Image 1 (cartoon, one colour):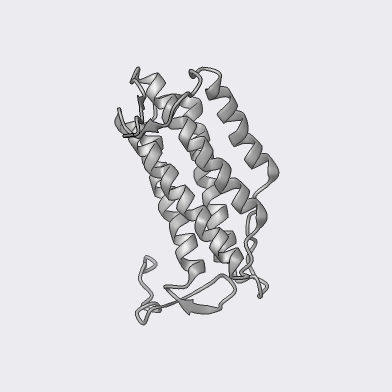
Image 2: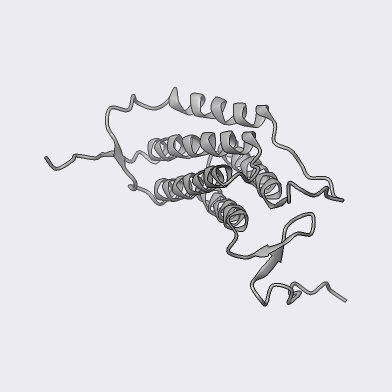
Length: 186
């Protein structure tokens, strides 16, 4: 018999962290890793829209790392878990930085703020970037409320949002789409 996807344990608005602690589904920790999960879904869509193999491979790697981030955030830091939780490494941040640097070498210097859009892949990169920034802000809120967040999680999310911004510009470049500068009304 197949494993049932529903357990009914959350029907009253509670869920369990890794480690067994029950919390409200509105708990900041749940909101935070839920946002990382949302980001991972957007990353899948961004990957579906990309055509360059190296970009697609890196985006799959990012999705894997976002599962790692989600697992880290889903753990109760006060309890020992019976399962092995994967870790982020400083090298994961470096991979993003190297990709940013490589894409920037092919892009014109940025002299203005750009409006999101111009091609569906560009727009989706910007949406993913915004969700990534929200996940980062939620991690900061957790820290401000004295909830443990692995420092590398914050660093990774910060760099990932930078990567997504540059990827949006790179996608525009690949599709020969002109970036539209923001011209503030004065």
